[in-house]
Amino acid sequence: MRILAIISGEYGARHVANIRQHGPQGWNVETWRAPAVFPPVIDYPEDYLPQELPPSDLILHFGEQRAIAELVPDMAKMTGARAVIAPVDSEAWLPRGLARQLRGWLEQIGVACATPKPLCSLTESDYGVTRRQRLAYDSPLIAEFARYFGWPRFHITVEPESRQVTAVEVLRDAVCGCARFAAQGLVGVSADEAEEKAGLLHHHFPCLASMGIDPDFDDTLMHVSGNVFRDEVLEQVRPYRRIQYIAPGTRSE
Image 1 (cartoon, rainbow, N blue to C red):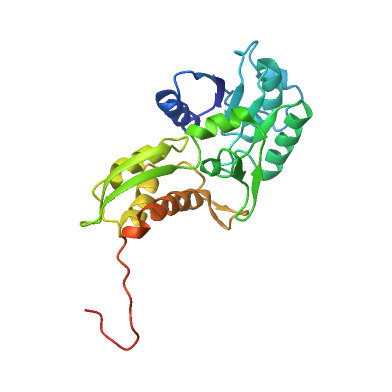
Image 2 (cartoon, rainbow, N blue to C red):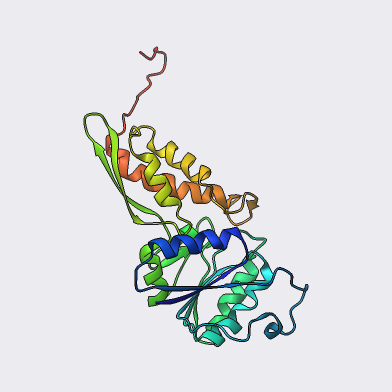
């Protein structure tokens, strides 16, 4: 698969580095660094695009300015791309209204588009857009990418007697590499503490999703992403957790 990643800062650079290091050998990942400055209104997108771009199957939009998203349809035409993933990890970079417009613009030219909010909500069939809404998509290219990167999935081994995590296999990494980082830190942790530890590791990586309150979640996207990690780990270690019962009016031993 030929992938073109649009980057403009550390956020995109980290994602590209992880994809190149851990993606399948058959993937070829090229990058284009977007201009640092844009006018309030872009009348002629071609003025901000390079003379040529490499032929691509999938475009990853990791730009950190809203104006960059307006260039994506022209880039899809230039490269022949048939699919686009444009994550919403910050409303300042890709507001929800512009994300809807981008999906519409690309649909008009026959290009599939997923706008996962946050990026680690992407699966092989759908992605999150609000607290209670997920959108399905129909694109083999996006699904192929999501086999390896998106909603983190683990296979966690717990020693029954000690109830300690002895191994963590990453079945699907977050695009930024946070799942692999968290997996290393979970080994040796008690099943009782693994969920909380996963949240701390996610924060310390650190996650680069927005720390501002997002109106679609009434929470920060960093916190939403962290809950994805915590829930995945909890599901794996739940059978080994010690359940404590508290009876009213009695003292705990």
